[in-house]
Image 1 (tube, rainbow, N blue to C red):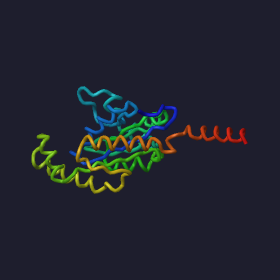
Image 2 (cartoon, rainbow, N blue to C red):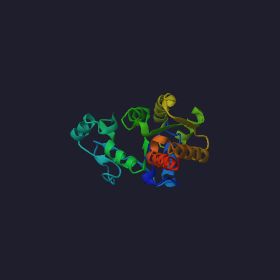
Image 3 (cartoon, one colour):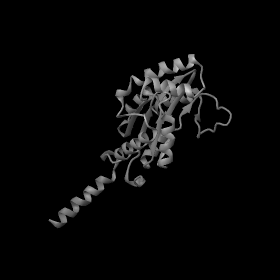
Image 4 (cartoon, rainbow, N blue to C red):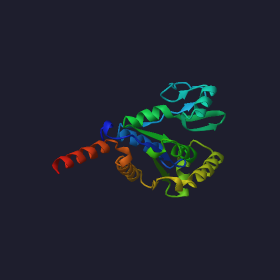
Amino acid sequence: MAQKQAQRRGLLIILSSPSGAGKSTLAKRLRAWDSDISFSVSATTRKPRPGEVDGQDYHFVSVDLFKHDVADGEMLEHAHVFGNFYGSPKGPVQHAINDGQDVLFDIDWQGAQQITNSDLGKHTLSIFLLPPSITELRRRLENRAQDDDETIQRRMQKSWDEISHWGSYDHVLINEDLDETEENLKTIIKATRLRRLQQPSLIDHARTLQQEFEELS
């Protein structure tokens, strides 16, 4: 399915959407489709919850260490949420893409913008998922049966704020049919893996062709 690791650089795949647009389901399907795709493990300053494993669910770090990494440019993106810091460490992502592994980010538009503007931004592939309609988006949130009406209304407002930034992404898909959207995501990823920038081995191949041409001339 994927090219050999030595033949390509990995991608930073950014997947964003409003809550209820199917992002989490599609992210899981992409990982099941190709083992070369893995989730980015975020760093956080909050305490571990029962059952959470350091390095697997999150990298649990101190506030001082987190701020130090931000100052040193070691966080691709970061945010302060409900009194805690969250961010994406640069080191593991750099290592992954050098090995031909794609890293999947489930983040909002602000995090996407930070990553796109980072020094690894040239390897990013950003995709935004739109719901087929606002009515359908609300129906999906209500069908979860997890929130009261007031909470759903807050989620709807936040969702609209997120939707308003769809134009800053490389690709935008309307997730009307989950299976069709999944296939479109796969097509986009496979095509982007073939970008010249993602294939460092092309340089050696071009040199070999040049040498062969000169020998035959």
